[in-house]
Length: 85
Image (cartoon, rainbow, N blue to C red):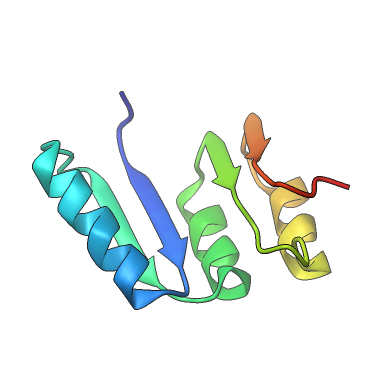
């Protein structure tokens, strides 16, 4: 359980599905926004999350995102990828 969460995804259909899933599971503290992660990481850093889960495209995370994650207050960063190098 968590106090609040933010999901950021560039795909509108993925965000629609996430919102439906959150509603179905009564997760009223989940916020989902359609945007590129390069814009979403600064937004999440402002909120001061304890944990971050990233599942980037095959190209990986941009330098901007990596730097924002390293500067964040997150105590846990989970990087989920089929190409983690």
